[in-house]
Length: 198
Image 1 (cartoon, rainbow, N blue to C red):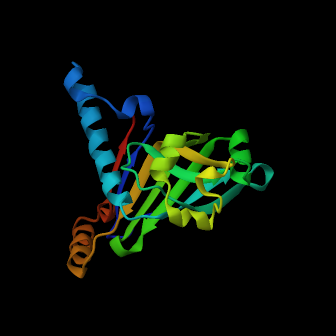
Image 2 (image 1 turned 90 degrees about the horizontal axis):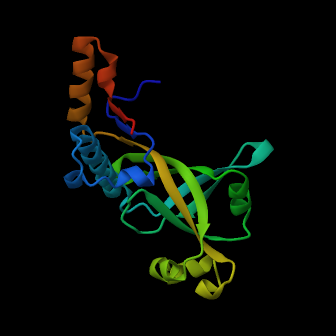
Image 3 (image 1 turned 135 degrees about the vertical axis):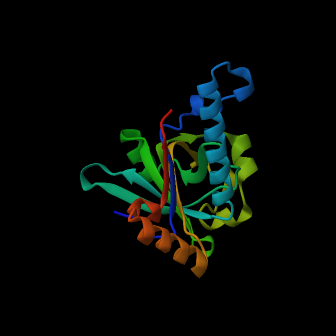
C-alpha cells in the first residue's frame, strides 16, 4: 500500500539492547561506526516523537483467539530502546506474556500528525526503586493501593523494531510532493522510506 504524499516512513530492524548502544569512538570498524551513528540518530528521533504521548495501545498474543489490545499509560522516560508501563502481576496480559513475550505497541499524536509502531518482547520487572521513580499519584485511579500494592509491578518492553509516520503539515508541502510524483512518474516519491538491518 502506498503512503499518502505527506508521509515519511523510517524503519529500523533488530534494535537489540546489545547493539543499540554502540560507542562509535571505541570501534575501529568504520561501517560499525556509521551504523551506530545512524541508530543513535534514529533513537533520538523516536525520543523526540514520543514526548507528550501519554497513552499507547499494547497488543499481546492471546493464544487461540489471536490478539488482545488495551490502552496503557506510557511512562515519561527518555526513550533508550525500552518502554515502561505499570500493571498488575496477576493480570491477563501478564499471563499471555508468560506464553508468548512478543508484543507490539502503537502510539499517535494527532496534534503533530505522528504515528509510531514498535515491537519487541515484554517482561515484568519488580524494581521498587524504579517504581518509585515512575509513580504518579494519578495512577491510583487504576491502582488504588498505590505502591503498597503487592500485585503492582512494572512491565518493560525491549523494543526490537520501530517505525514511524510523520505527515508533512501545510498545503505547500503536499503540493510539492504531488508535483514531484507527477513530473517523474515515480510513485515512490510519495514517501521517504529507510530500512536498516543490524
